[in-house]
Image 1 (cartoon, rainbow, N blue to C red):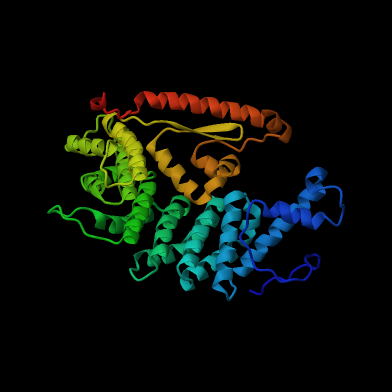
Image 2 (cartoon, one colour):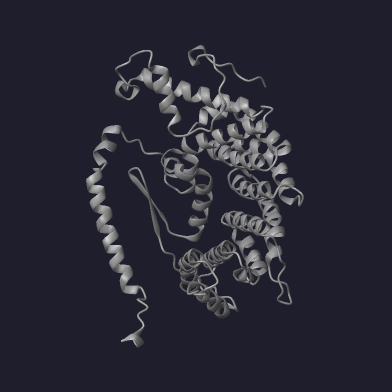
Length: 428
């Protein structure tokens, strides 16, 4: 595909493609409209003309990114992929993407097959964001049908770039959740993930295979993607998975990688939650030794581990232990715009964390405006709030400062009551 020509008002200069950022649209809009008035900014105009110009300029830049995904330069292709990723993570562009979905899919396919390392990773991530934009429907199914075999080939190819394999594991899980139309295909994808992370299980004699840190990260990605698909499995499949994996997963809690321990702990809590949804009295035979192991991780004080790792681990495993022993979950409230959403289960937490990994700082925007994301979390149709109402709801910077200071003081007092002062009584 030939590269698009620069418009005359750009000065005819060739520029390198730069990744899209939140400020780009506004910056280029100001530049484009400066010829109309030197004294009035686009923000002050606030009319339809300013909005139309901003939208036109935004779409023009996206078209440039799409064209640049077939450039001869690997650096330019990757920059274009990153630009499309950033745009899709922060904006809802359903109509624009719908018209160009096959072109974008072809570009992703080409980058996955012929690219290397970072380019493959960026292409796999873009595929996820493309499906998130299109939602659950025939369009995303067509995209996934094209890319799914490539994801699996890279994932299972031991000679492929390890970063590409990690990205394909996560993307395959997300895209299967969104676009897979046959539950049997979901089971097949889960078996593909099992074949990876189960290699980290302890063997029958208690020994454990040794892997490089990057391979361990791949197994973590596979485990988390498997757990994500587990959230949509029917009860019969959940029972089969419980009998197959619940006794083996605790062996991952002894892994040297803190992220593997955390991923295994959260997956165990998720399994217990799903099992108790089927049987409120569910209690496995080896519950007591499991609780002992979880409690040890929740109170870990080993000096050979980094402080940040221990802090993160203890926080997570306190929640995991409570989930296993009492079936309890510490609810977290997510606020976005004028709405709020409660993360009140391990199923919701795994789903929310998976989408947030790709959307990043744009998650709140997608919770407000993305029909598919709102449907996943049962938020209903998007709420329409005018700018005057939003302005009236905003608090001043000074009020926000006072609120944060009061919250910090209260939090410090609450923590100081539980914190060990470590006073050496012998000195007195």
